[in-house]
Image 1 (tube, one colour):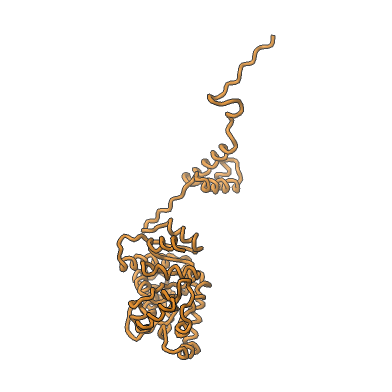
Image 2: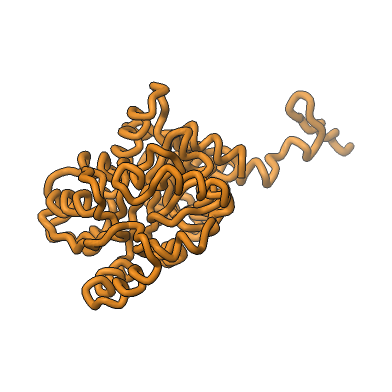
Length: 336
């Protein structure tokens, strides 16, 4: 008599082969193993491959999938006050090389300016490799940023002024002063552009730009791989009015032409285009379009008054790095 076979035992709630571990479950198990070894136990990908019997390429693929499927989550928690989520959103939305967004803890223009200026100084001081040549513009934000620069952060740096700025009245925000102080912080030297930002006659500007000295400075401004600048809102309280380059009547005329602010002394409209060609023809300095060719074109600007002009600069693609405050960042993400 043939003995009776014992019935196969299955796990509760399962039938036959359905109790087997699926290939997806196997892969997820491997992902967890690889992730633990890599992130928690500091093993190299080669060591993990040997331990799990895989190739190094397969381990790399597992680690990538673990992150993509949420098995591994990375939280970026900077020690200095930052908003990494807004920074990433800005980079994606505007295709920026980098972004720094600082929180707003006090609704005060002076506080925001100083916070953004500090973030700008930290970003520049951390550039690697250290730049040999650095272009800088004028403005209150630039003046504040230079005050935060650490001493001897980049020995021998050559600082180049990007635009004219010698005014009829004295101001610590003039580019000559800003550039010299930046150069001093790095034990370097500055090449200045000793002419006004905006001249009274187009013919005077054209004559100055033919001068070998002025032409040489402008050529260096074009050559420098890094440009750092701020944007100015069109206002009767702007640096241009403060230094005597612009009258309140001219501010009103520019506003009628659609100007909302300036970049390197060039007044632009909401799309980042030159608002008044005749006025632009009297302005001395690097053309904004040349900023697009820089390795680092760094805009440091914050505060509600700058919202529209920062957006205009982004629309025109004048800069690939933005250092700003969280209110400005939110505005830019909601109003492209």
